[in-house]
Amino acid sequence: MSPSAALKATAVVPGVGYAPAVWARPRPALPQEGTPIPGGDVDAEIERFRTATTAVSERLAARANRTEGSAAEVLLATSKLTLDRGWHRAAVKKIKGGESADAATMSAIEKFVEMFKAAGGVMAERTTDLEDIRDRVIAELRGEEEPGLPAVDAPSILLADDLSPADTATLDPDLFVAMVTALGGPTSHTAIIARQLGVPCVVAAGAGLRDIASGAMTLVDGASGTVTVDPDPEVAAAAVAEAARMADKIAAWEAPGRTADGDRVQLLANVGDGNAARIAAQGAAEGIGLVRTELCFLSAATEPTVENQADIYATVLKAFPKQKIVLRTLDAGSDKPLAFANLEHEDNPALGVRGLRISRSNSGLMERQLDAIALAGVKAGRDPEAPTWVMAPMVATLEEAEWFAGLCRERGLTPGAMIEIPAAALMSHDLMKVLDFVSIGTNDLTQYAMAADRLSPHLAYLTDPWQPAVLRLIDMTCRSGQDSGTPVGVCGEAAADPLLACVLVGLGVNSLSAAATALSGVGAQLAEVTSEQCAAAARAALNASDADGARAAVREVVGLAQ
Image (cartoon, rainbow, N blue to C red; front, side, top):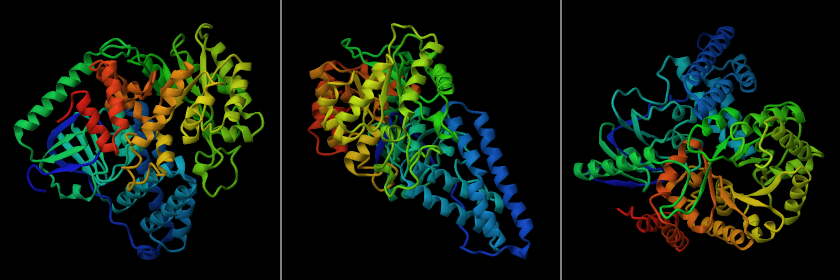
């Protein structure tokens, strides 16, 4: 790439990195399908396969033990998937049929990748993990270097076609000062982990990224999405200095969240368990805006009892005994399979029986979960004056909202709903007649509004919450909230984007819920702008013709234009 040439990509994590570029280690070349066992010893080849998978699994587990939070969860899940009996059986069957261990690994993983893609949703998200396992096992079998992060001893800009969540989870922010991928999207797991680590990140840079050679001085702006090769050193130094100034402001910022002129904005954390809640309580979080309650269901062969559920939820409630806590009821279905409740087959699970729909289709499932949430408050010794907020996912109709709200009120719980289906945004005025709050799930709202799979590397420009169509649905919901006096929050990845947070506040959002590590950056940015600037930013974004135009217009409004 020529000096000072710039790539425009999708901004994911704000911040600036300036250092020599380094490419991720390549994936191993895949074997030809049906490659025979060298020497023909089937038993020895099966043993070689098992030794390789065990080595890869143990290495990932060891990394998990050296990390914490979401990174540890990703590594541990990948470690377990490496030893999954389902794909192992398929691979061993291939080996017994005469295929080499690496060819059998490729064939077996491909079979499961196709199955997971067909399932859609969260299952489809695991295909990246499966392909990563395939590559690691094949490299292990051949005695090759493991694909993924290169070994560096000085600050570098990491370039990759794509990165597995397991690689991103082990990334050292002191050595990799920014990352750029050719593929990926703003809500992919890799992007989410990069945001949690606070590493400036740009995705969907396209084939042009390959023109950047290792060693080339590269400037990455994670807020604007620009990647510049061999920039003017003075320009780069100024960008780095400005980023350092903002980093100092973030470090110095103190909760609670508010604009420069004093308007309050609640900053809440998204968590999945009690440990994550305790970590959030030690940081900037004023409470919890999303508790993913389905985590105690997904690995269970039978429905957890009310008592068991209550014990798990209580560990979260104890972390914030008096503050706002919002629990999302079971968000599962064909895309997050339940052993005890799923339909056997759905042709299009992403638009199938999931979220509230699966709870309604299984008699008593919702009632028992709400009983458990109410009991958890007692077990946790929660302040009686602190309401427990509960929201249902995938609400589409007024009748669904009425049904859910009635069950909540019978148990003394505060009812709300996720706004993640365009129909819910369009019906928000009516929904708020029966609900006490709503929370906008921008990840699903974006992919449903734009008819674009958020995991598709080819559709990152569509699965961008900056799309004006998505912002207009949010605006419609906020106007309904203002008319009815109903609190409106955001708990999708959009809430972790400091610049977009200004727009959301300008639209009328009362609370922002994101990964705990993202809250200080959001709070520091809001502290730099007035409520009028937020309103102006919202108007500018709504009037833009596309996502890039919206970003550029808002940067100008808040004084960040380049």
